Amino acid sequence: MADTIYSVDGGIVSTSANWMRQYRVRVYTHTADSPVITASTQEDYNKQFSQTQTGDEILDVSKLRCKFEIKRHALYYPNQAIITIYNLSASTETSIIEEGYRVIVEAGYNNTKSSNYGQIFDGTVIMCNRWKQSGTDYILQILALDSSQFINEGYCSFTIARGQTARAVVENIAKKSGGAINDYYISPEFDEQKLTKGYIAQGSLKNTLSEIAKTYNGTWFVDNGKLYMLAYADSSDDLPLGNQAVELSIKNGLIGNPKQVNQGIEARCLLNPQIVPYGLIHISNELITEQLVNIGTYSEGITTPWLLDPHAIYRVISVTYTGDTRGNEWYTDITAVTQAGAVPEMLQQNVSYTLN
Image (cartoon, rainbow, N blue to C red; front, side, top):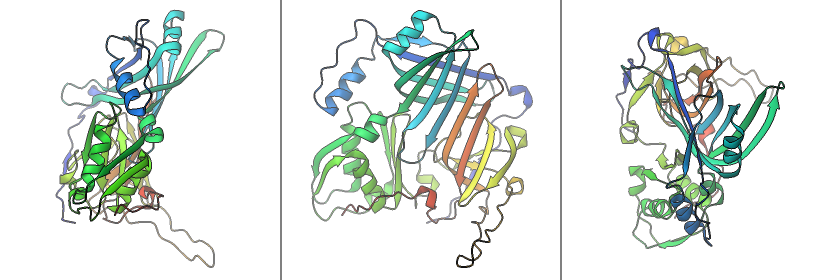
């Protein structure tokens, strides 16, 4: 793996005067004249479901109190959002419960000097729950997942001729998703080796994509409707997010002291939509509380934690955004790994397939 020269962006938010919250929460609902879905296959269902979005009603609930917890991962788990909305009108609440199908959350800070505001979730409504709190507040809670149907229920059946590469397999899956995947990125590493025999993709999409990722020592995930197929050996210059790291320090949003964990670090900062799965962050190692060695049992002996990254550059593998538009919570919690070149255990995939 070639050395990568990282550049660190230290100008995201420069002064405390820029910490003014900005947010938008929208729920999409079907209208009464939405077409009835009559598809008989997964691909036809995805196409028809996508088409029904045109002309449907968009409910902007940003003026009400909204709380959210959004989890995004650099693994094949669906991104998850739990959104709590307070005191909706009876008609709006009923519309969301009966016809709500999509939710988009944008959040960050109103800073004219930088783009510290953006979309942090786009997913499908799975279920709604309502109750009354303290005798006065009516609460609607929405559970939404990003591309859950594609990840957990998707099915594929096609063949790829000998001489093609793994890219052809992944592209075929993405293009036939019927709108479930709106874009994709495939590492150049998946162009290196040609298939020595024809490849038959039959069965679960999750197993097929995991099989390919394991063969090339990589990972895959879906984030905001975009499919990523990545190799651990990729240089940051080859990744869609590039080699620019988000600078985190006391001056621009870092909260408390990050702590070292088994293969990397955990940190909290003020809500920042620029911190995304598989993106880079830069935190001075002087700010990180190191993990103590594990004395273990007599048979295990002493084990020491992984070293901190010598360049203080870390790869985000999991990020959680927590917000309350009328409360104090407005945070990003980060789990990140070092750039040592070894494959961290927390990114290993528990599959036993090989592609070729």
